[in-house]
Image 1 (cartoon, helix red, strand yellow):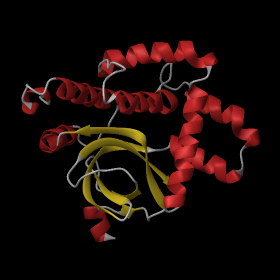
Image 2 (cartoon, one colour):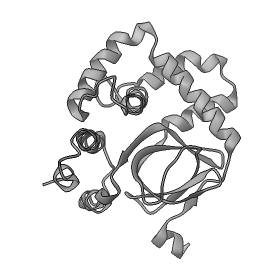
Image 3 (cartoon, one colour):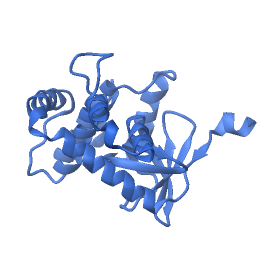
Amino acid sequence: MVLERIFGKTFGVPDPGGLKKVRRMLDELIDFASEDRFQEQMEEARAYYYFKAGKINDDDPDFLQRMNTFLEWFIFDHRPGGAGEKSLFDAYLAEKLPRLSADEVVMRIAASRNHHSIFMVRARGNGTVRLKDMAGKNSFVVTYDDELEERDVLEARVISVGRGCFLSYTHCLHPKTTARAIYAQIKKRRGAPLDEEFFFKLQGMQLKWRHFRQIHVDNIYNFN
């Protein structure tokens, strides 16, 4: 227990079957958010997101990844009526609840309570990556089948279902050399939760770094 307080806990065991279920669920949520009845709300949210995190063109190689980041924010975090109002996920659950099994409800609620943070990859192999939460002490053994390298720094959402941990589609990868600068900013928050303004700022920096490689990365990830 003493070591856990000092070094944190490690969560997650390999669960390839759980990964497939989580991705099917995320696809269902994205399909729901993309329905015509939400188009006006989505366009307003996207304009706000572009203003805060930077606009990306649809021919950009990172367009799909950035749109996944936007969609998950739109589904889980965005509240058009302001703080305390319902999210799109709340509307989804209220509408679909009568037709969902108990296990499906548990998985969807787990997705809405995802752990959104900045992580560093500590190890990888056998279909998993070990992520260290840079804003806390805990680590997550995440079942994941895409390429990540050791010491990668990324914004991500970890969804814990049962004993398994999984990454959502959100995956904003920052240069490895920015780890110290990002961690220093997290430390300045003195334990305060990472909020959307912090993520928006980092996403904007990442987009600028992708587009302007002639500018030194230290001049882009400059928090002064």
